[in-house]
Image (tube, rainbow, N blue to C red):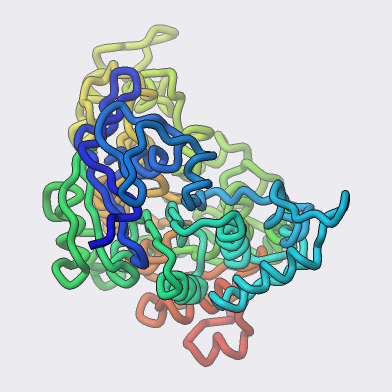
Length: 516
């Protein structure tokens, strides 16, 4: 029997007082796709950063092709044929695809770069693995899916036989994901070995030859897709049953609570300018906004919340014009907001849980008496929310900086939901949180809807949008391409709209273009 390409046994890794990995086990066969899954903080990314040489390990055995290695550096990992494609692409926007691929590894002809030789070698990868990219285009001119393929070819060009992919489908449409999986299977069939890190359990089931589960820094076992299910994988990751799919009751909507009329704003880049959007949200419904990140979703939310100037158009909240209101004035009109970046706009991480819980009421009774704070009332209020929203650890005095991403997000959700506003904007409400917190936050949003609040949900997680929304609006390059009812919306038609599908094709697939 040939040795494993990678073998990691009894791995340990500590960061100061945190035991990140206590019992790490992982192995990789030649020519397989092996998924590594677990909650945030389970140790999966740390394990792969150890094998790529980004972290030293504190204990255990590492073998590459049967050879024992006491220490691994990134240079050694590359020499041993290991490549890592990170979630954040490391490409230079102003350089061409070709220049990005060969950067730092340029073939020379005398003192000049031999571009013809580079093209010939890269074309070999394009043809062999059916990766459609255009070498002469600049990075800022290509799609996210193309950029993903560029990163893979760049890794292969450097001689990788093993590819470690960290959340590789997080920014892809369903159609791009399907094509991406075809590429991964071509790579596997060509003899490459792939480590696939993901929290999307249906994708893990679809693409994997084997699946390794970690929980709280410990190895929980390795299984094949035939031996498990998404529900079983979630249970192994969390240690209990997890229910991510929300059972939606029949919608009992009230009056229109948010109305957007011909909205135009500036954008952080050309494709994210908001260009004449018309939308509405009713009481007791969730309107989900689907789209690839960077197509105007952030600008749209910022305009409604008073964080970005509206250039043209109107925003009506419960019939009141709140266009270009300040964030505070918009809140007083009945707007609540779970921001997409909890650290930038949702929390003061240097302050305690209870200080963050009452941030919107710090100068109001019963928490303030004149200029003095009533610490007893603040603590009592915070304890109730901590228990209701299952924030851990539960001491109100704990500094928020010390909490996991999921528990930090629960504080933001608790504070905004308890305001009981007329409209809740939930922007990327489960981004960067683990599967247990995802379940909790989705359940809370559904409960908020059931009490009659209108919710505008913006999420890059298409499964989340489809699971929670009563209607789905799809944004592409600052415009609404189509609006689907929950019964009409599916991965195919929403995915097509996310890629800018024609209005004729979307009409055939059930999209309502009157509001788009």
